Image 1 (tube, rainbow, N blue to C red):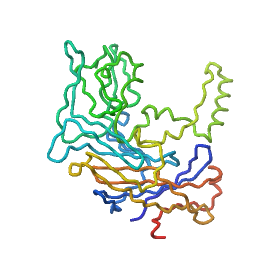
Image 2: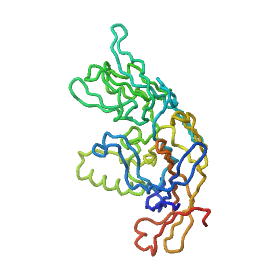
Image 3: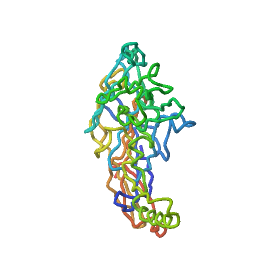
Length: 360
């Protein structure tokens, strides 16, 4: 099956302009086996959401593949925690290992917050479950309403549940407790009714394996002006400040390329080679330990800017494992440095391609 591919201009962190070629391939999964899929997913040119009508507070199902440069490899795992077939569980530890990456999400059946006369707010015992979705809507977070009606969102995860304020509309008792926890940052009864909003920094870490959203903390703090436009933006701001001194002297932030990392904590930060071993526990009802190796299928990426096709150095940018579909997608990227957008006007030819190495 042929590779899906596209190209996109961009830059590296040091402001060097590049043209990146994106190569994508989709595979089917079985325990110990990875095969090229008959149906190839396209190169996504936009983000996807579970509820397209309410994107602001919806689970993110995917991000565009058209990212010219990521500092490290994203590993995104979508699916559910499954009790072994024919059984029910009260809680399970879903462990993930992908090469050097390690992460565990502790999964509970549905729980509620209850008010006890002498003990205050307590968390009920979990109900038994056979499967539990692994999205951020079931992790700690959400929006709390204060006693005067002011809305406060939990910056690390505004789409979650369990975040309340003492004396507010949701102050603990009767609240739905998150199903997903980070074992190193568990959800405690006090977290269901924080004394004040400023205490959010001491709240538990939201736990999931899927895509983060661009408005999650700290991801949104990495946003800013691209390095190649920073100097021009600063000059423009200085001119505005001369005309309107009341604007003050606000520093324009330079973009941190970590803003492109869409995977959850613990599943990005290193560059993978594409041949790593994968272990997923309790993500398949028939195989509590589901294991396979990434296929070591490195594309031949080329870019022709009028001087003949030039081979680019491939780097693995994104790994997406969709366990309910038993599907794996690998997105590779290679880039060519060039003189900038203005130079494209004089380029005689601009043609990208992605091939399988065994065919060349």
